[in-house]
Amino acid sequence: MAYSSGQGINISLTASGDMNDNQYRFVNGASTGGQRGRFQLATGGSGPAPIGVLQNNPKNLEAGNIRTSAITQLAVNADTAINVNDFLTSNSVGHGVVTSTAGSNPYQAIALEDVASGSGVIIAALLENGTVQADNTP
Image (cartoon, rainbow, N blue to C red):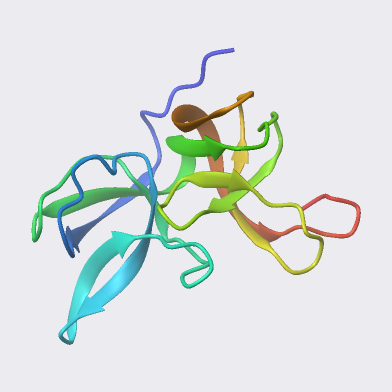
């Protein structure tokens, strides 16, 4: 089934660093030298709550278009297979990865497509925040 990622809620923030080659990765808010309204690449464990997924490739100090809700394209790392309905969070380079540890791991997206393996593969995902429960449901 094809999914459209053309509609959603997007915000615009300023890139803290060059974001070339980071389109469709998770990003976090950033404060650089006390300046607000910026974002950076999500880093997983040290930044476990991404604000959304970058939709463009801005250079340093250019505007980034960040999808915060609805369906988006998402770059994933499938070291282990990703299946439809898997809960996804960010790894250290902003790629979506499966999270399933009940009660302790938040998720930021739900996979809408399967991926057997590969890094940087683009899939459709539904942006949604939650915590995986003991029965592996949101």
